[in-house]
Image (tube, rainbow, N blue to C red; front, side, top):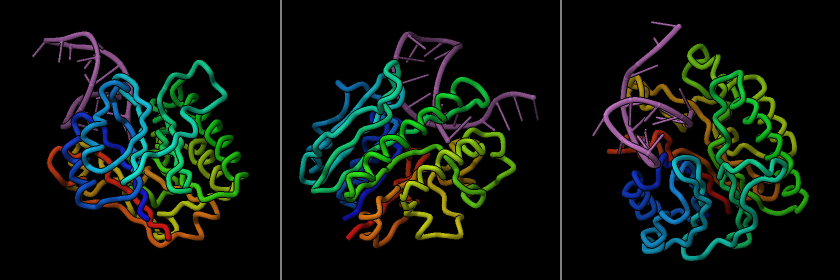
Length: 256
DNA sequence: ATGGCTTAGTTCCTAAGA
């Protein structure tokens, strides 16, 4: 089965691309981020017509995550992370599909840093790590899929120099991500491409796509039981080059 | 040192993204 994470950068603007992707690739599970849509404007009918059941956690204007499942309805397990009751950002949605636990994650960007947005990002990573530990304790097949807004290593970006002051690759951001992995999660793209040089995002600005100036921030983390089933992982890069594309490309893992 | 693009909402500008 193939599980995809795809930051669509606006589900309304991206609906034609998304439906195209579902029809052409027929992924089994798709975790979406940056819906930029409130709950009542999520295009449920179009997605159902494409053959997918859906759960979504929307928010007007920005954020918003969803889980799609081909031929079945994902069963909700949790929306949002505990630990900060006043936090109203829609950034976490966890579901069960065919015995697999999947979470769609949209980790805060954190720019500019230093500042309150960066502090929020670091606190959010800590809260995610708490939830991730509880999931590992269940000893099940789990996939944490999403836009982590963390460039894990220097070889995960086209330019360390261009990005050095960005929240995406600050030592604190990387330490939070590393601590998550250290719980026992497998970074599936890193396993498949240990030398780096694989991008999942290309900025709209400064001809980044044309120059292949990207970085890797969309990740699929596997619990040990899921990692035992890992067959392959990759990026559907061609979708970044289509008309009216998202600035992220669909990123996927195939499990037995 | 800055802006570049794109999307959405409070639209003919501003905020947010990364």
